[in-house]
Image (cartoon, rainbow, N blue to C red):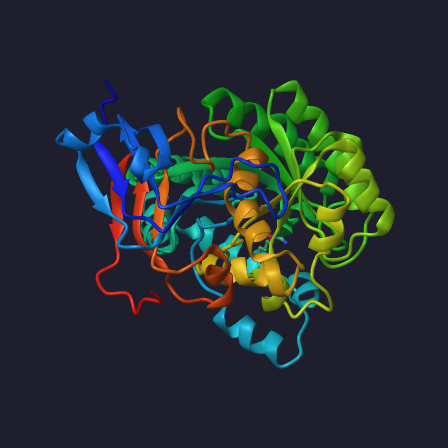
Length: 419
Ligand code: NIG
């Protein structure tokens, strides 16, 4: 007998995301149902075939009311934990100042570093919680969160402990990434190599020892860090069994995609300025790409990452909100989904796949991002008539019920509704 403690019924469509990436990836089931037990999916199929015994059990029945059901979003790139804000800089940028010049003048990321250093671990958690809750309300059930605003051994550890404490407070999965090479802090200016040495020789081992992160990351860019500095980080990360993610080719083509391929990075993120050679290198190496179109819009970059060309070349794609105080102050994952279509050139089903199965693959999560037996029961009921609609009706809340680990973690009181 199939036993379930929660079943989702009355869905017009269940996107399982069990196909391979591409237009057919959603592998939808018309009039589908999903049965869950102890936080795991135990059955998915057409509701008419729902095993009779399940229907008679005292399982919580969640009525999709004719809406669509899919895996929860995997937000594969965020900087959710920070203090302070950069509203004034936003205004200056809108009026013509550049992101890179603000950083060079000691603002930008460094302004957030000052505020984050001044905040306690508890305060950082308190500030991050409402941001995370806004993501959950959008249907996010897994979120990657980076450090990178501490930039001293002590402050990076404080940030990573705040991320761990945040994870304990949240009903969704959190994947932590240490970002020691985000920007050079003032104390690094006089002895750049010495500062980098401390990050690599003191911070990375401490992160590994305390189990504070699964990945390390670097911002490879003019005015940030060089490919050679990222190579040094990659070597230390490998020594400590940490995976590598990279911010590359965001503002200028630094050969970052080729670097990610050379270093066997797990993901290369941003890529607005990637070259054709870079796309080829990613495709050949199997490095996944996280598209971050909200920041492309927010920084008024001249072009979006070439998602279409990357997908056509066979590169695996994920999607992130990139929620952060400087380049993407938005928890609106639905906006990222629409921009992945409008800006990066994905079809709506491709964007949804990147935002779910693609993100799980890019974070190395083998039991997330799909609706299939044995997978974590991270599901969203969207008040929308089709998966195209999620991207089409832009930047509005579509998630009516969000289920993480088999528990209802968010229910929208009154959605305007598209049904
Ligand atoms: O992914 N590009 C570097 N890092 C972040 C922005 C961080 C900030 O501006 O505070 C990003 O866009």
